[in-house]
Length: 148
Image 1 (cartoon, one colour):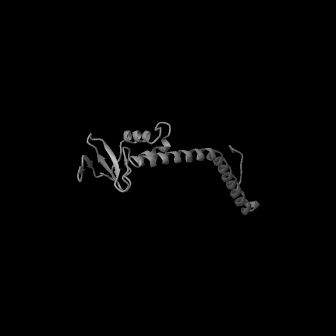
Image 2: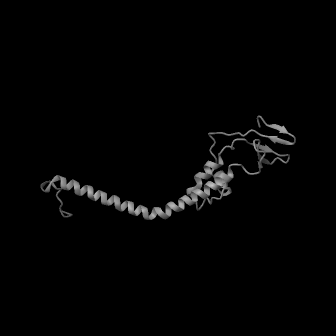
Image 3: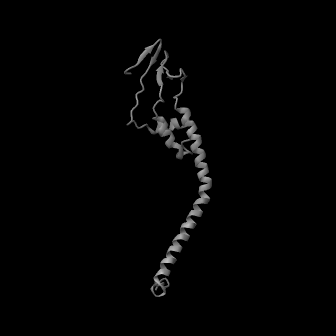
């Protein structure tokens, strides 16, 4: 607790942020549940939990400890306090947005993908035909029946 300051009966802590910290899988899963992700059925959203679990406090916020030892967060610019990490609500909103984006991509992506594949296949056929036409009738590739 380097740099902790006692104000009244509250301890103002310094955030110990480590850029190299890698959270455990359990920490990520627990945080995923906190922000509304089901780790078992929504693995495509787990990147948000990985990002959120290591997110630093927003500007102006400090972790504090009350007389019972519980940690809360206080914003010295606005006077707002919270028992929850101030970034959690932002990550909950991001989860909702990303979930919606994934749904839209899945609903339009399924049909769009087939159309794109069909177009690509047609382009390949066109290119092949153009190449054959440019070779002239006498220079076309020889096609033989299979097995000969």
